[in-house]
Image (cartoon, rainbow, N blue to C red; front, top):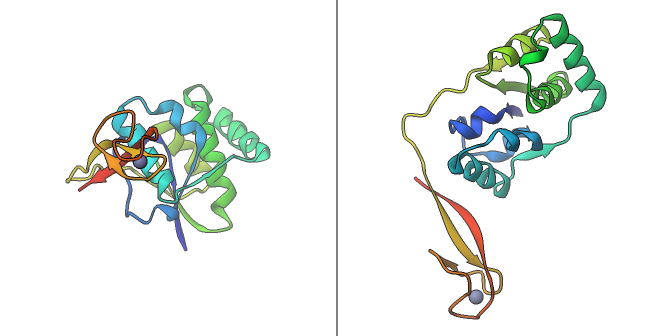
Length: 163
Ligand SMILES: [Zn+2]
């Protein structure tokens, strides 16, 4: 199976290559780099639809840091960058993976670590993302509000993808 390792740009620029979210792997620290509501929504949608979120292995992080120090990219790398590189390094020999990133320093380190990379190309058709409210009781969805008009339970915020 082909896996994509997704750095924050995938969520920021909607760089999903397909909608089979379970073929994407990322790390929780990418959320630190998601500033826009749209990017956060894309992350939430991916989580709801099976994207794999994992913790990087400490020894793989150390290898990444050593390599980045060698290429003089270490100062350019965020915690999320190091985490995602560590994750890609872990999967490099186990699965057919491609690291999706537009970050020059990340690409540079990945190249030295023999990790397959692909830039995050912007999609032509932008998906429309909206928030909805879902009742925690009867699961009915509403555009807004705090309390369910049907059963009186609380409404929880949910993201939804509109194509
Ligand atoms: Zn309800």
